[in-house]
Amino acid sequence: MDLQIPALRAAYRKGLHPREVVAEVYRRIKARGDDGVWITLRPEEEVLAGLPDDPGLPLYGVPFAVKDNIDVAGLPTTVACPDFAYAPGRSAPLVDRLIGAGAILIGKNNLDQFATGLSGSRSPYGSVESPLVKGLISGGSSSGSAVAVSAGLVSFSIGTDTAGSGRVPAVMTGTVGLKPSKGLVSTLGVVPACASLDCPSVFALNVPDARVVLEIIQGYEPDDPWSRELPRRDEPIRRIGVIRGDDDWTGILARLAGLGYELVDVDIEPFLAAGRLLYEGPWVAERWSVLGPFVESHPESLHPVTAKVLGTGAGVTGADAFRGLHRLRELMSETRRTWAQVDALAVPTVPRTFTLAEMAEDPIGRNSVLGTYTTFANLLDLAGIAVPAGFTSAGGPHGVTLLAPAGADGPLADAAERFHTGMAGATPYRIRRRGTPLAVVGAHRTGHPLHPELVALGATSAGVARTAAAYRLYDLGDRPGMVRTPDGASIEVELFHLGTAELGELLTKIAPPLGLGSVELDDGSLVTGFLCEAHAAAGAADITGYGSWPAYVNARP
Image (tube, helix red, strand yellow):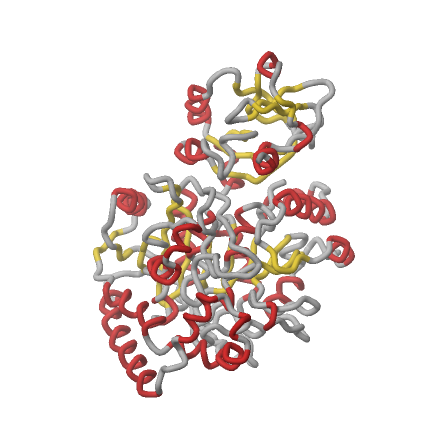
């Protein structure tokens, strides 16, 4: 089932009911097991009892989740600190807007404690791993929010972004991370990290979905001192400021140039210097001003790295604060010279990726590396959007972030959508007319060893589906074999869309006993998919009972 918004709308028009979507969402959540994505998951029966009944609503029947620093009436807000948890009397306005638009709230996602960190590894509820590469960090602090979307558990999720928490997880999970201009979306009902910099953010599988959500949640809130009515900047982006880098980054710049953008080399140092102020300057004291009393009275309740970071704010003086503010104004003045030359900036979302083990070796230093190109955005009053850009030559996920001055959210998203559609991350529903559906059973699935082959061919994931009850699954060693039989069962597959020529190229890479053939899905449709010659099943372990190759792999000792 494809959970992207246009696909759901089309399915609802054909008779799909939201209860079927909810059932599929909870089936997927259960199948993933204890993945650290959720802090509070609403009971399925509670969700079913409150389904929307107006198909005309803009987000009718669209499942979503929110980061657990955002208030939802009836659910605890923990900020990944159980001793800090409280029961809010009302939901954040952005949550009310989404539910009022017909969206279905599934639950609240894990995060780096107190939204402090960019790794997804600072939570008592567990570290969160990227679905793309085993052992890779999910990014943070909106870790669970990004993975919930990447893993196909919800259509979109709401995170927050102070220093990059809505963008770093996007590159780590292959999702789109939209960070609006400050004040465009109200932070009422959001536990402050740095109140003067905080932004709710959106994770989705594609730019149009993220924009649909932003249209619902944006708007001036008179009771919010940080909300503002921004003048819109509607001029299209033509000139993009860039920095030079390695071959992987050079390839991304070539794609931007191929889309017709004029690329202009810029001096990035004033931007980076502004970003360093976030943790090396007085803004860490803004976090301390909110959390200091709790930290001092509950030192045992904090993750040790979080406690160390927050504690640096205790000694900031008033003079330090003014020195920081003055330095920021100087740097803003320097960056205006750049904005006189270009309409937007393009930077790598992160300079490099890290595994969970690598983050544990140097949690603060490597966190700073992750934030190199993200920490300056809110300090300099920029809007940003991070989109996937395939994989690096080293095998890690790559991404580009586009940035522009506040108010340019629309043109920025236009440019991001053009880039994303031209990459392997193009949205499946936009390319179906020129792509062939492909059902993948095992080693080519997202996060599995041969998945990079599909990425290199430009394949785009359309989520998971199930076959008709007519197949059996066998363990062939490093991959499964799926055989059609009269006594079969329904097997989970992952659907991709692949160009006809690329499908032919893939076929040349597939060694017997595997091949491509017609696979029947549980809705009766036929798609091209991986199948196994029947003779290869003789003597192989029958793993049909696991229901999918990932479930079997995860269960192996």
